[in-house]
Image (cartoon, rainbow, N blue to C red):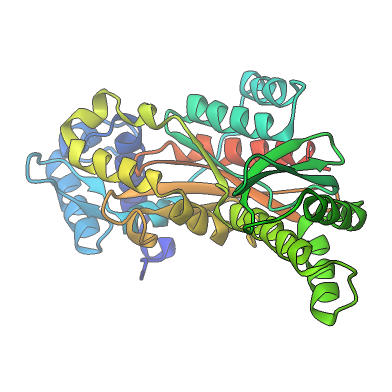
Length: 347
């Protein structure tokens, strides 16, 4: 996208452009020349204002909807405003206190992430999103409990006390001793390791013939590892809250765009892939409308910031998704503050 440098606009054009953008972001409606002419800082006749608006429109910064004589910013105009003119407002003391209070509640990190997503939605009147940290807990033990002739229950216990269960298909004729041998073998190699680390070590032993398992027990180990690996690949990596906030009164005249946006939000993996682009950013990133392919049709904006653990490693992304008429000056620092606050919880 080619954007006109802010330096190419004279003072009068820059002030009128800023007023149009701020007015549109505040009301969601195009801004007319009469309203602009009434601004003390403009001090121009409506005819002179219209001339400046026409010039800004020819530069691709403003557009005139068919239903109104007023102007509204294009995506190019919004990008120019966000990058070169926007004055961010730090979160209020009340907003900071609400964020810190929500994150200080006792409970697992997943609960804090859900609260973060919901809180961002409440504060921004848009959809709040959080990418879950990509890390696996260290494991303590895994048990294979036979349910019937064809199935066993795999119970995985983390060192943090978490417990997860999976159904595993077992080979025909598998004996109780084979299940016990597989359980003992897996548990002996899990202590202090993630599943990925333990799986790699176990597979190397089995392939090299260094394990003392018989064929049936080796098969059960492979099946147990496979079901956990498959689940890890399919496990949602994104928490989205507040889709209903997008269905406000301002959206009633543009239901098709909102439907498109909500459909996009249902594709969590695609949203996660988009947010992943913010992982390497040094600061909050803003994607406006068609700047991202996922939300090109709905014309939506994404404000996202990476959050880090205590060693400074990026472990996830937190952000807001909503219409291009987001209050960027308020939401950007709010997302940034939330990311920094969330990072303090990550060990």
